[in-house]
Image (cartoon, rainbow, N blue to C red):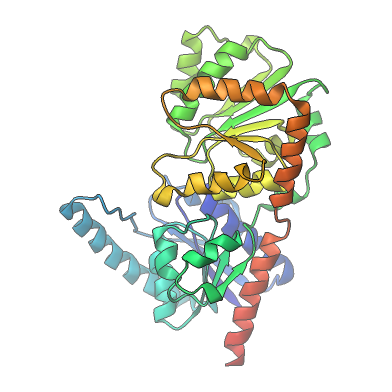
Amino acid sequence: MKILIACGGTGGHVYPGIAVADELMLRHPDWQIEFVGCSNPKTIENSLIPKTPYPLHTIDVNSFETFYSLLKKLQVATTLFKSLNQSLKIVKKYNPDIVVGTGGYVCGPVVLAGKILRKKTLIAEQNVIPGKTTAVLSSFADKICVSIEESAKHMGHPERCVVTGNPLRHDFKILNREKCRLSYGLSEEQRLVLIFGGSQGAVNINRAAVKLIAENCDRKNLFFHFVTGANNYDDCMTSLGEMGFIPEEHKNVKIEAYCSDMPRVMYAADVCICRSGATTIAEINYIGIPTIFIPLKHAANDHQRKNALASVTRHAALIVEDDEALGDNIDSSLKYLLDNDDLRKTMAENSRKMGVSDSAEKMADEIEKLIISSVAL
């Protein structure tokens, strides 16, 4: 059997695709799986997928926003036709049994090409509110995998939805907190604070993190692990230096542009400060981490806020607004959590209750069902 998976743009779209591919290959080592991503070499799929056993095709594709000028919209429309033509060629040549989309604009033309060529199609939506691409594709996809039941009512065909959760990397399933904390050399009294803005980084979170670290780096009961994003590392280090921070003198602070070992860090963390992308939340809930979410203000359909509220209403997280008071509010929220051991324990338990441990398995089941149904025809 052959499977074609389209995903791209952020780690939140790519990691679930890799996770379900890995699960399928565990079950069916003789199957073939290939990926389609964006041709822009800066997109994360072009760095992540080549590290896997799966071949990667690329197409030219752009996002489409309603606020674009008429000229920009025409340029995007031209690229869309080009990307559909490229996708049709890939699907025809590879001839998959099913086309799967796990998120990102690249899914649009690829899944559409699959439908045009009468292939079975499955899409996955990680967020509570679907993005534009998923909303369109849900009108004709054979199966729609959603992270939570609430998402189904926003789809073109709710009856085709199945709640699978959000597939996670295999690394999350083989680690444990004790060993991960031991790898840091953390004492029982030390609290690890993990700060990151997602695979792309986040300028406002970085500014707040720089201030937080500069003011608290002398507290030996704290260990800060700060992931800046590839494009922001130099600026963050410069700002910290201007505040008198000397890396060599603070072994309780680790700062890096990109974390290739995020599962280990998350297992060791006592508090997490981050955006509220769906895959990030799924990872947090799988482990159970008290978290301060900072929703991206301009996210489509305000989906990051809605993602975060699902955790906040279940007393598993706090929300801090991304505004002028961000730095001060993060500082006070972090102090509140660190000073309340019982609260952190309760939040961690509530977070774990929201986690889904077998998401990749469930999505793989749905893919298998569609393939079997197509063979039976």
